[in-house]
Image 1 (tube, rainbow, N blue to C red):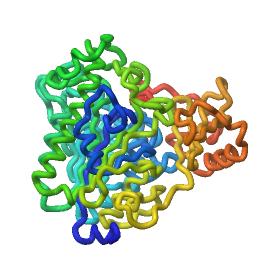
Image 2: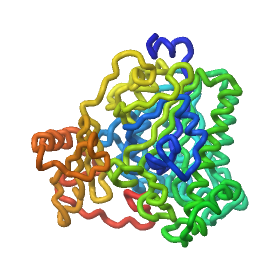
Image 3: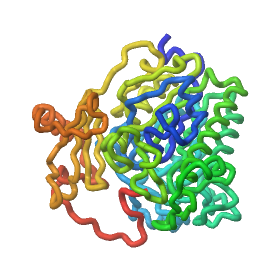
Length: 487
């Protein structure tokens, strides 16, 4: 029976969970040795674990745009973080306090919009990052019946916020000052509460629940009960407050505790599905929006946890460590339990896959390919001729994956410091760590990658990528706005 035929009986519930800055090797089922992730390991044991899945981009907002719209970074509307200073009037009207990111326009078709046409009730709880209340990117204008959480990723730098948003209305929390290590209300607890209530309320109808969690993004903050499991087991170097991130006396233990706390809540969701008899009619997808945090930002320590495993690079990089992510899919009774797939896919493939499995309208003008045949073990699985990324930040970057080949171009917006046209080439089959640049030995493959980089890039007024879009021009300083490329 085809995926569409399955969905015709009753479309499956869909739960899409995205961690924030979780590395490829930070789950037990992906080789993590320190952080305990029993629930996610259980999820993988009951479904399919992908080894060659990629995020939409190397940082938050553009990656989530690819996920929600099914478009690759050369075609997507949002291609970088950054504050939209052209929306200052709306910021004052709606009292945003935080600037938000460049909003999705009305004409973009999103995954929740497609599922709503199929009769789904939709909700999101966590960090949005694709628009603010009152503008076109407002999640309530992009297909979500309920949105709860942070609109702006700058707001989401604290896990004990002064307030969260519920469908455009602020929900204030006494005892949270929005900057301290501790508070009375932990954001993750609220996300779990909303998620569990949404599932209970809508158990008798098809639902789509998007959970873009903010763990383990810094600041490093975890409830005491979670911290206790790691405090005496990990050697520490205290982190003093800087870059607007909260100080922490035991940041490594705090980071591990955050991941395990998220894992605990995912276990609660899995248990509720079983309790309500929804396991066999719920498609669950778990992944991360990009690679692990670079350096010691906010007290994080990706080297200590071996967060990217054998991969080169971290968040902000188009090398594998910045974009190859954990990716787990479970649909009990439909996807064979305990399986592993090396199918090469990316965030823009999620929209057409979910649409097919839900029997929803065939999405148009997307770059993704459904991997439903891989999940169900039936039918012909189409493969991409290539995967393409561009990222007009961290120096300006492009990357292409063609089979086992990976081409990377760096420093495109810093031509004085490097050759912006130089392309590196790696064979991921034999060099997963991208240590040996073999471009000089394969000029014909480099030429093919260069052509793809030219062809896949659709110029963007908001996110110009030099030198493709012409000479690099310095951007004027914008008072009070977040730096583009960072979140």
